Length: 338
Image (cartoon, rainbow, N blue to C red; front, side):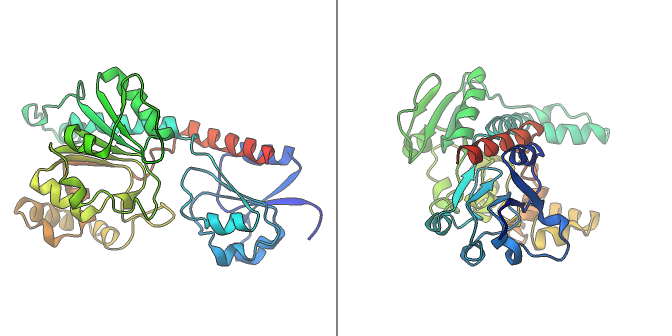
């Protein structure tokens, strides 16, 4: 290997990171500018790697990264990196979880207000020439009780956004204490089950959190509730969510993330995409199945995209223009400190 310190970008990020790395005497190279080349075949030549979520850096990959000193993950989640093995090999795993906290908090508030006020339905109806006021009567966020599960960067910012609505915030974090103050009450899950009108997840995906929001969890709530999930799709077991929307236990759901996303978060997988591409005829069949109560015969993702009680976005809560640049600046600072 030559004496030039090189960084391989496996994904595109804001160009400020390239600029900052060049200022630190790194040479930046991009995998998408090397047609036909696999990252695994060239990784031994690199001192650092920058990644979002498209590739999985597992033990097999990292064992070939014989000169790698750092992995810079442009975002918060590290589930596509074998962090334990990387660190055992002296590879620093850097991330920027605070970089998109404001974007996620804004998005969660926007989705929640839109769902409570039926804006997704009303907008569609007005565009079609329907002026339906009574059926689109809204529910106020004012003075509701919101349970926040996971009180890291995004959970904290979401709580700040809720302050102006005079809500009670019950925040639970298994690995964090001493954060109560203002409108935030440090709470147990049992407190949230008893009092919450709305629950919002701000958790990483781990073995502990996978499918945490399942039928058993849902039915511990004393009230019928609204769900907000801007964290990871597989925290929610979709089939159980659908079952409880149908029963009325879940009044509505804001989902920026879905169980059926590809591992890179770039698209939906499998049956849901296959049916969506079939157009109007399949849409009508799906809506008819919901109407007559035959939702159990549908793929759960198809239920979500047809239900007026569900508001969806394509994993973009943290995807603002501002967060894109901020994440790169944070990673540059952490690489410089390293």
